[in-house]
Length: 443
Ligand code: FRU
Image 1 (tube, rainbow, N blue to C red):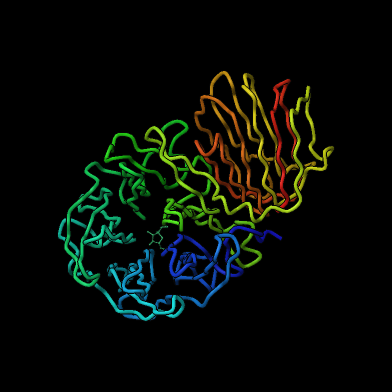
Image 2: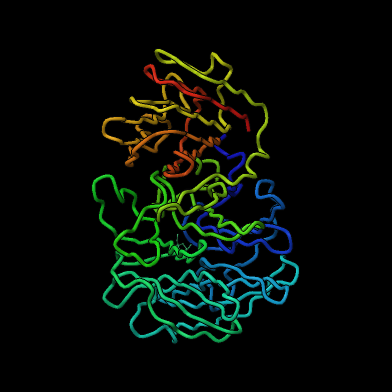
C-alpha cells in the first residue's frame, strides 16, 4: 500500500544513500546502500539500477556484496567513474573486529556496467593519516583532466568532523592532500561531494552533531553545502524531515543532478512501511543551479515523461476554502504546480487530506515563514519544519504513495518528507489571493 510509484525504493529491505551515480555509455546508473535481508542498518550491499531517461528504471543484479575481508561488515558508500571505457566503483569497506572499526577505500571494476569485479583496497586502514579516527569513509571521485581526486568524510582525533582530499593518477596509488574543511563541523562529516558550476565550487557534505538553532538543523543529522570555501555560510539543502547523504553527477547535458536519501539514520521501529518489509526511498533527480551563492534545486526536466492526465486552471480566484476535488483534482501520485501572482497575504494548502488526516503547507506572509506541518498527516511520523522565504511565487509538489517533495519558487527551498496517509484531497485556503495557474498531472 505504501510502495512508491516513481521514487526508487526497494521491494524488500532497507535503502539508504545513493551511490555511484553516473551517465555511462548512454545510460544512467544509480546504486544505493541496500540491506536485502531486513529493514535494519546492517549488511550493506550496493543495489543497482539503470535508465535511459532517469525516470524508467531497470533493476540489475546487486553490484557489491560484503563478502570479503576488507568489506565484510558493509560495502559502504562511494561513487563511480569511467576510465578507459570501464566503470570503476570506489567505496568504503567497513570492517569490525571485536567492535573495533577499520575502514578500507576499495575499488571494483566492470566492463559491461553490470558485473563488477572487486580489486580490493587502494587506501588501507593502516594508511589512514595519524590525525584521524577510523571514521573515514564515503569517497566521491572526480577527474580534472590530469588527476583523479576523492573527497572523504573524516573525523579528527579530537572528535570533530571534516572533509579531506586525496589525488591519484591511476586510481590505484593515492596521495593524501589534506583537509578542505578547516572549521569543526559536528563530530563527523559524511558523504562529501565537491561540484563545480562555471566559475564557482560547492562542497556538499553531511555534518553529524550540529545543534539545532531555532528553525535550523532540526533533523537528527544535517545535509548542506558551502560555496567557494565559505565555511561560515553553511546552508541546509532541504528543509523537510527526511533528507540525507545526497550525491551528484553530470547528466548528458552537463548539468549537476542530485539524488538524496529520503531518510536520516534514525532507527524508527514503527516506520509504517516496515510491515510491508521495506523502508526508505531516494528523491527524484534534481537539477542544481547556483544563483547568488545559493543552490536551487529543480525537478529534472525528464520527470515530465511521467505525466498522465492533466488539468490546467488559469486565473484561479477563490474566496474561501476550496477542495480541488470540485475541479476533478485529487489523488495520491501526482505533480501539482501552483503559480501565484504577487501573493501578498497568507496562503495554505492541505495535501494528502481526508476526514482524519492532512499535511499542511502554510505561508505566513508577514513573518516570511513557510511551514510544513505533519502533526496530523497520517501514520506515526509527526512534526513541523520551517524555513524563511521572502516571497512565495510558486509551489511545485511531487506526491507519491508515501513520499512528498515540495519545491518552492523554482527550487529556492525544498521540503522532503515521508507521509503515510490514505488522504487524496487537496484543499486550498487562499483568502482572496489570486493564483495565476494551477497545473495538475496524474502520475
Ligand atoms: C550515511 C552513511 C555513510 C556510510 C553509509 C553506510 O548515511 O552512514 O557514511 O557509508 O551510510 O550505509
